[in-house]
Amino acid sequence: MPKNGDIVLVVGGGGREHAVIHALSKSPEIAELHCAPGNGGISELAICHPAVKATDIDAQVSLAVRLQCDLVVVTPDDPLALGLVDRLEAAGVKAFGPSAAAAKLESSKVFAKEIMNRLSIPTAAAKICSSPQEAVTFLADCIYPIVIKADGLAQGKGVLICQDSTEAAQAVTDLMENQIFGQAGNNILIEEFLTGPEVTILCFSDGKNLLPLPSSRDHKRIGDGDTGPNTGGMGAIAPIAEVDAELQECILNTIFKPVIAEMDRLGTPFKGVLYGGLMLTDNGPYVIEFNARFGDPEAQAVLPLVKNDLYTLFKATMAGELDKHRLKYSGDFSCVVMMASQGYPGQYQTGYTISGLDNVRDAFVYHSGTEKTNGQFATAGGRVLGVSAQADNLYSAIAKAYAELAKISFKNNVYRHDIGGGLR
Image 1 (cartoon, helix red, strand yellow):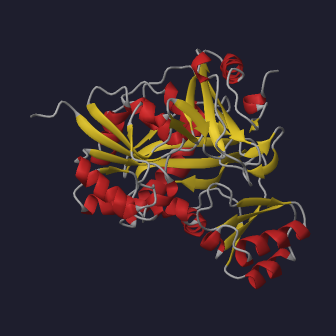
Image 2 (cartoon, helix red, strand yellow; image 1 turned 180 degrees about the vertical axis):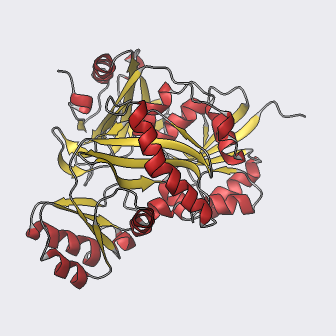
Image 3 (tube, one colour; image 1 turned 45 degrees about the vertical axis):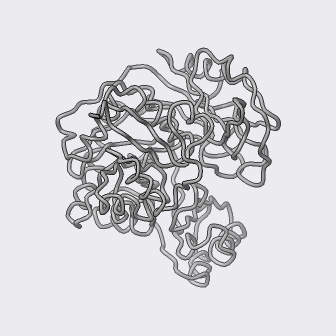
């Protein structure tokens, strides 16, 4: 029998993947949506394969081949760094996302820093250290505060802001000797501390052409007032008032276009979503980091504002045809607030029943860490839910998100009260 649409598999199981699947579910070109491993909320929009972990490259490739997928969307950082896109394409399966070589812009902060320095892209001055002794020697002459970063992937938690030499020495010990993030800390960067508002710019890249999405701002720390340890992200707003058309064009011309051209020159063209984490300093935008995929939770704030068929944009990206498309943007503002398990990003309990989801009317709830059993949702992760609301002004979007969040409850839930400035 002829197919009545495409079969698409999304790799991952968090809120970002839920946001991507929610957007893809609106495409008339897709007949079947799958997600591996998926989660409780995703299971309402796609067929989940919970036994297939995102980092199990062999199992992901086998699943894609067995399903006869027309496209596999690889969204998390780990499988990109492990070369899942390369393996899928070698097996004859089309994949959205950068190759492992291109994903080094995220998987190695040292590589990204070397690229930026070579291209004279504004970024924090940094010392690359490959041993604890080298790091400790360099710290003796540092001006504080400073930033210490693990070179490799650390689930968004490998950036430590140190206020004095004692904190810095402990950070070096934790990263390089205790290896709290495993081999990600084999090499570290010691960077100058930049000040200014942070913004995220997400761009589709087909290797040569760019299509920017609305700007956004993530809130990384666990506590109100940007206190406590870094997390994977406790909420986000979009777009950001400081990023007007002129500044966006400056960012594209001085940061994104040179990096994309350089990756192409190196023979590793970047195809997928390039994430620029930027600091708007008094001297202009500086790069804090690059990621090789949608941000989480930025995707849950940005994607609801995009009116294009996301599947069409994915295909145009992989075909090198982004120059034929323009972004259709709703013009609204967006706010997503994350509900997490008490103790996150450290130790936390799971398995608590979630109630009130059916009462949410004026927002969409993206599931980050949930499971569904006998029709009932329960917590299954550190970040559990993201309540995302849109409105014609930022204050109303924030108010909607918090009003709808108040309808949801589970034991030991925590969330920030000041995402986007909170309710002033």
